[in-house]
Amino acid sequence: MKKELSDFIRKASENENFIKCGFSKFEILKKEGELLKAWLDENRNGEMKWMNNSFEKRINPSLIQEDIKSVISLAYIYDTPILHSEDSNIPRISRYAWGNRDYHKVIKKKLKSICSAIESGFEGVKTKYYIDDGPVMDKTWAVRSGIGWQGKNTNIISNEFGSFFFIGTIFINKELEYDKSTEDLCGSCMICINECPTNALYDEYKIDSNLCISYQTIENRGEIPESINIKGWIFGCDICQDVCPFNGKKIFTSDENFFPKEEVFNKSAFELINFSEEKFNKTFDGTPVKRTKYTGWIRNLKKFMGTL
Ligand code: B12
Image (cartoon, rainbow, N blue to C red):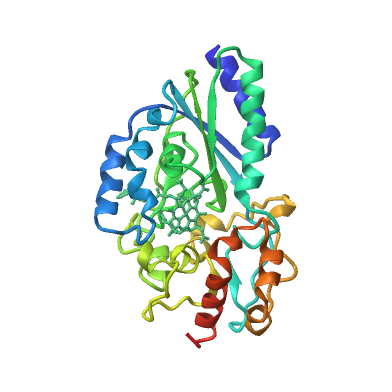
């Protein structure tokens, strides 16, 4: 059953175009939990207080589903060969968010289809799936499942595919053929740390969200501190991934959902700031950019234009 089920899941994930699928044994995340607690105690999560509130579930998913035996981690590439304009007057939206559809929706549908196939193919199997939408440590499980290692920029990096991929997580009540964790290949490289313009990567493998351009332009609901230069980014930031040597592999998605939205791609700040609230809502409906709301959109563009 173990082999048959594992093979079935690998095949189902391939059918949904995940580039990697790995399995790990379910355990309470003791060591990672301590690191997460230290991070939260130092307020490195900024105003993302939902991370404190769900701490116990994050380190012990059996509080979400009682009988978990294994964790399935899946990687879905979102990188495309399209490049941002080199013109520094053109604002940038990060690659994961510049497309036509929100990854939560796209990936959720795929995870749902995999889970339905597993549950109808094997009696007594129960699953629960997440894609950055629950109290789950997606990266920790991905490391344990052999998807990649956690790099110094804190993202999960695969030697074969780089790091421009989303991570889906499935909990399952059966044992599987577990994968080995992969070796950390960051070595003595410090490029991401040296290139982060706000020093958000305050130490190797450690990030302070308060200083991260991604946090400031997406999650922060208040003003962006004067001391933070958003370096041309108006939603998210890709600098620590763009400079990573493992991202030169040119492995791209063919999923249309993640190609840039024409109406906004490489458009001037003047054009973008003139969007009415109605136009903003219509343009970004069903995309990650909606998360910052119209007020965040205008705030980020004003900051970009130096008028904030
Ligand atoms: C909160 C959050 C953020 C926050 C905090 C970022 C962070 N690094 O945690 C902010 C808003 C800044 C953010 C930004 C981004 N995010 Co985000 N985010 C999350 C979220 C919801 C939780 C992550 C979490 O638990 N953080 C808690 C802290 C404690 O974790 P950590 O930084 O990994 O810290 C660990 C290390 O420091 C480690 N550690 C400490 N010392 C040492 C020493 C060594 C040697 C090692 C190996 C480790 C280690 O211990 C800590 C605990 O495990 C996840 C989705 C999820 N549910 O998991 C997505 C997620 C991490 N984000 C994702 C993405 C794509 C991004 C962005 C690229 C988006 C963008 N372009 O703007 C940026 C990347 C910025 C960056 N360098 O991390 C993807 C990452 C995919 C991948 N390949 O890794 C995820 C997994 C979503 C998904 N399911 O696909 N994000």
